[in-house]
Amino acid sequence: MTPHAPAPATPTWHGVVIALITGLFFGWGLALSGMMDPLTVLAFLDVAGAWNPSLAFVMGGGVGVTVIGFQLLKRRTAPVCGDLFHLPQNKAIDRRLLTGAALFGIGWGLAGYCPGPALAGLLAGNAETWVVVPAMLAGAWLQRRTNPVGQHRH
Image 1 (cartoon, one colour):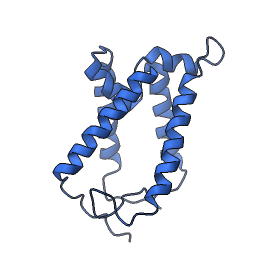
Image 2 (cartoon, one colour; image 1 turned 90 degrees about the horizontal axis):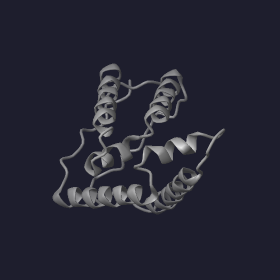
Image 3 (tube, one colour; image 1 turned 120 degrees about the horizontal axis):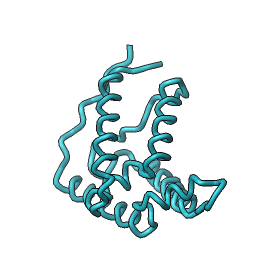
Image 4 (cartoon, rainbow, N blue to C red; image 1 turned 90 degrees about the vertical axis):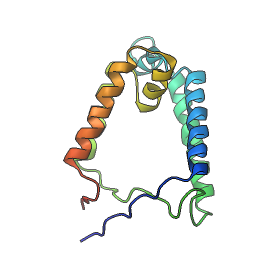
């Protein structure tokens, strides 16, 4: 039997400030790169038509920053605003993962939004995000109901 993960600590004020600054910086990058416009995303997915490769460059930039960030994190024993790192432990590629990925992809392809741009779009006044975000939250709620925290699969 696998032990349950420790309860998350209450965020400190500096952790909240860092999260706020990071979120604002991320949202600014989404807006600057055009990723808050679902037509840009849909044009990337339209490989047989008017394909727009800009999303590939945005993803490449994100992957590059992540690779560098993880190399720097490996040198630390604990995060700046916490006691320990919370990294995913489940590495299995199973039916649930593939089904979730397919549903995410279908939703992304239909709406042109993934979670980050959808949330940023709320603040930018994009009317369609008032439909996309509740649907996204309903999906997150459903996932929690079908796979409660602490339930581990092997």
